[in-house]
Structure formats: C-alpha cells, structure tokens
Image (cartoon, rainbow, N blue to C red; front, top):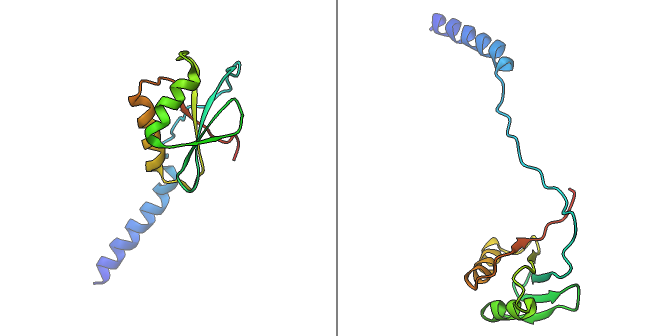
Length: 122
C-alpha cells in the first residue's frame, strides 16, 4: 500500500506542474454592429409575460392579436412592401417556445425579414 501512495503523490505533483501549461480553447465570437440607418417603418410583435401577442407599427399604440391572425395583420401593416422588417420583442420571462411559434407563424406566411429585439449592453 505504501508504494501506491508514493506513485499517487508523484502523479499529483506531475499534474500540478503541467496543469498551468495547458492552454484553454479560445472561441472567437462574432460581434454585432449597429445598422447604418434605421428603417423608416418597423412592425413590432410584442410577446408579453402572459404570452399574449400585441402588434405595433412605428411606435404607435400596440393592438392585441392572436397567433392565427398574426400573419395577416403583419402583411396588412407591411402594405405590400416585403422590405418592411418585423421585429419580435419578448419579455425575458416568456417561454422560448412561444417566441419560436411566433417566428414560425411569420415565416410560414412568407414574411422574410423577421428579427429579434435585444437590449444593448449588459
């Protein structure tokens, strides 16, 4: 039993010496820049903590809607201009599944420019 303890102590010393020499992997994450110019018109879909949907165009008062009517309302607000971006703003307490359902409903309707709203900074 004594030689086994000696072997373990030698291995411990070897690991203690070599551990600081091991380099950790570095992940180079992409950075997000600012847009050169804010779009003139933005359709915002708001997913509240109660998981109810509200929709607003250019900062106007939000109007309640349902997931079934969402695509039709958004297309109506875009007024035939597919370049008008749609931004989904969801409270951080909302289930991720509800946000994905909202994105899926918009993409199934053929709405191309769908993005997520985030808060700048920490």
